[in-house]
Image 1 (cartoon, rainbow, N blue to C red):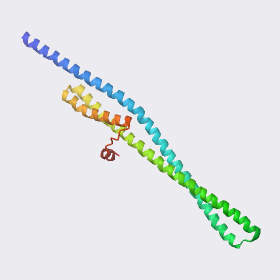
Image 2 (image 1 turned 90 degrees about the horizontal axis):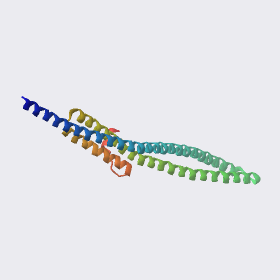
Image 3 (image 1 turned 180 degrees about the horizontal axis):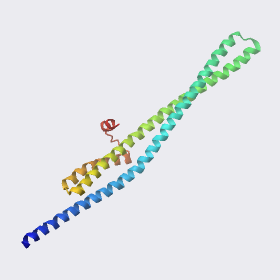
Image 4 (image 1 turned 135 degrees about the vertical axis):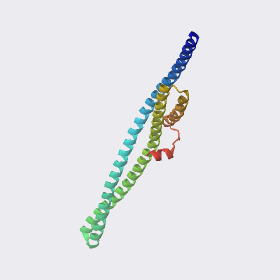
Length: 198
């Protein structure tokens, strides 16, 4: 009977050692993932701030574009009115109308040029926003995959199933890959997944 109990105790100690080693792997993996996610979060927050700035810049540029457009339209309408008045003006009145026409034509041309510049800036702002959003998607996917991995690691710690640890390594690796892609600016972006989740 003692031998059976000793064998049972030895088996329990061996299983406890295996479980402790598995729990150590789980704890180390979770700690490394938490550190990595923290680093990614800092970069992602900076990217989100830059996206907000790009969006604000785009809206400002389009607003200024509209203001320039209104100014151009008013100047062109004034030119049309002055052109009609010029046909009836003579002498000193004609010179005054000519001076006003020159001023409003210059103003219309100036507003058109400034409007075109603002349009290019607004389009560039949208391009900057899209590029930043591409990287933000990478961090979002990394966060999701790491959260899935941590959940699986928690189940591993509870169930002591070694195979579950290896299942958790799959989203861990993919999450780290997407996080590195965001940190290092790699062109790795699963468009189908992000479109499905959007």
